[in-house]
Image 1: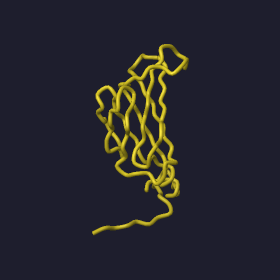
Image 2: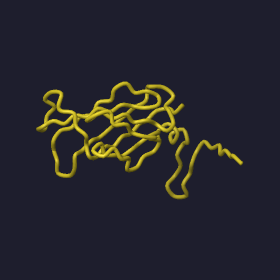
Image 3: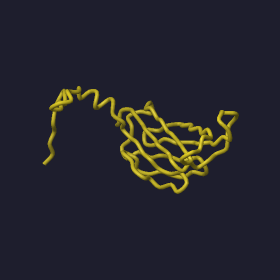
Image 4: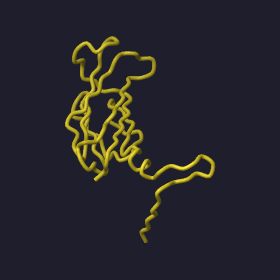
Length: 132
């Protein structure tokens, strides 16, 4: 038996209430934490799989596709504690069912050129937008 709850607000007994439109539109539709070094997903929401396309080049495939390619992505990459070297993430051609992430590593603390493709030990990925 399927059910449906229709509500315009959610209220907590002591913390107040929030409009459900805020919950629907303001919540992440996908997130993940994984390591490029071993291509293992540590934890995620709406991430079906990651594909290793080569050093610093991964395709993240969504379990539920986005409605359009106009969703927002954010990633953070790190090689481990105590490392201050600069890292860079670039997203190319997000598709409704996936997004490709390219990462590069720079020696030093400034973005001085294209850098070297690198598989980071820690990757955090976040996507906001409307699901299909």
